[in-house]
Image (cartoon, rainbow, N blue to C red; front, top):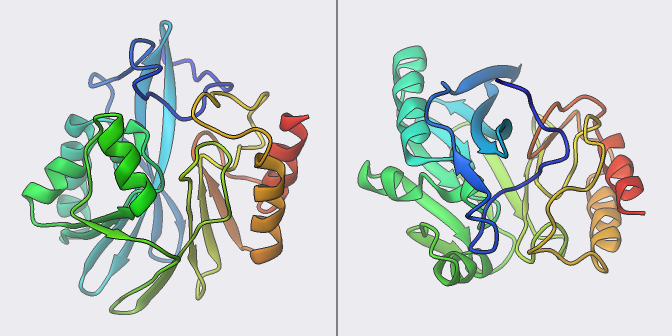
Length: 240
């Protein structure tokens, strides 16, 4: 029942909404990464199987910074409740890495809670076009955010999995959140690219690797995150 389908990557848009649905029967999971960094895992269904999606959260003295929402509003509520009970802190900032629903589905709920939500300008436009939830704020270039004790940088390396995919870099901890641009070493093919640019994808990955050649951790959008920067080369191999 809980078989993870390795070849499925980021989910549904207007093109694939019929195929993908969020799974509200499964509970979200969280896994410690390093220091105050944790991976959150939510789920969606595809053709009778279950697909897991990764996001990231970081504990700071002022509250929790979230990168990508869970796959549905219900699972976002689960995550909010879990974090408040476990860490006794609230989410104060959320950045979504591209427009697909496994990154943005919880934005409206977070906005209701007063969380500051951000996407790139291009992601905002694609969310609107595809009727996905939209962030409250946008940035139109690579941007540095500072929360007490934490600095994070957004970076747009170019088109790949989607036209708008960004990554997020945490320089002090050397954690790179690659999102769905980067495929896990567990992935056996490139997955869904219906909203992507296969011609530009390889150059985008090389640009990413040149920018961040030695991350301590690299988190892909789905499946395991072992292998660090080698996951970029693995993604390049899957594109051949």
